[in-house]
Image 1 (cartoon, rainbow, N blue to C red):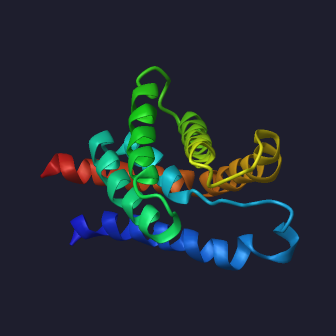
Image 2 (image 1 turned 45 degrees about the horizontal axis):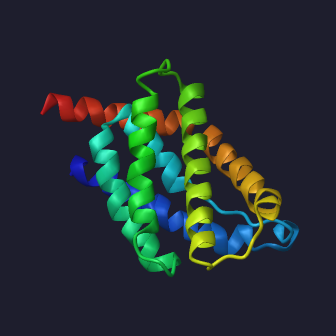
Length: 172
């Protein structure tokens, strides 16, 4: 039973992103900005640090394909981007001290990498005509602030959850 909790947790976060966009991000006070929740990226970053990087990359591929099928027109953008940021975060954490504040910063770096990566791909294939200044002003800063709030609220529960699962796996 315990082995199903982690996939269910990640799936719930994935579905919560969609619900958040529909009910909160599209609300009238936020119309001036494009709020893009990347809660799954934050969870995957915590998973890469506190649980297991290869497992996080596997979840990144699976959730990336789910993102591509559900939300984007181009298949493979998120399926390649999510495992790549998990890998980057896991390698960077070998340099830095492993405390919660650093992990939050790494998860926000992962969100920033995904945002610029998707913006770059969309600009290259002419899906988006947004200039870099407009992208920064309307989307990037608001997205980083939104995901920082999520990371600050859920940092300790995610840390405890993934440490518990890492302990559970070690005991088997």
